[in-house]
Image (cartoon, rainbow, N blue to C red; front, side, top):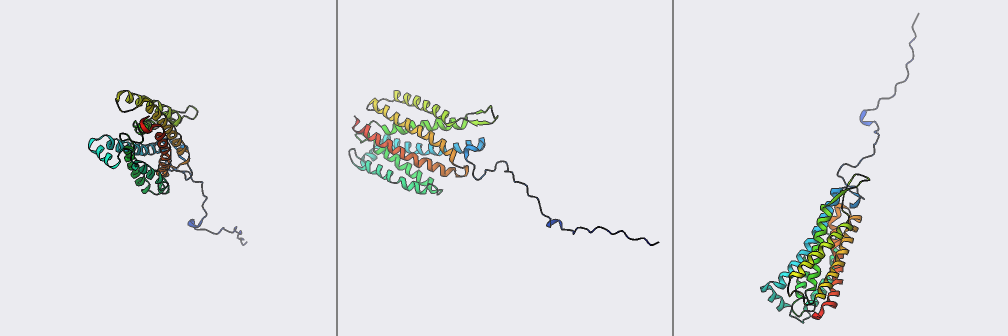
Length: 276
């Protein structure tokens, strides 16, 4: 008998391998890659420390530049006579220079997102501000007893202490086991105490630098206000800035800091004028 062939089931059409649909898996962020909307405070230990170090180091360099220029022009003998010729005691030129510094603040605010012009303009401003520090505190000047040097010198000491404490000291969180940096609140108190201690030591060792002890106390009060604001704003920037935008954050920080300096300048004029 003839064998009937068993009908075979229809075969599925062959699809080339390169045309087969792929199942997409959710992408996981690679180690070391920063997400687009991640702020510094939400990222890892090293990223937070790097952001703090860059931000506070640039601020410290700007303060040191202004303070160095002012002290050299004010107390270096050849340059002191040059400052006295350009800005004689009782003249309005130091006030005009201070007004120029104040009027240039909106310019810094306009370029603070344009690198490298933000850094260049801020450095130039810091240099001019240092000239103003020297010109406004010449003998019989309109700011007496070197009050501004006290304010900026003490603030520079505090920022240096804040930089060291906020980037060098850490602890282990017991709940998560993660390594964390000291908070700005803790670092701010340590820096404030060091600022007071070093400033008092300098005050007791320097003879004839201050015309009146009250000027030193007033300068330290203004320096304490400045340093408290620096600590607060540094903490705020870490919560609102991304690591790639750290330079923009630094310029935001520094230009806002200048407004506080100008407020302290006004207080110095009211409290230190005439050496009374």
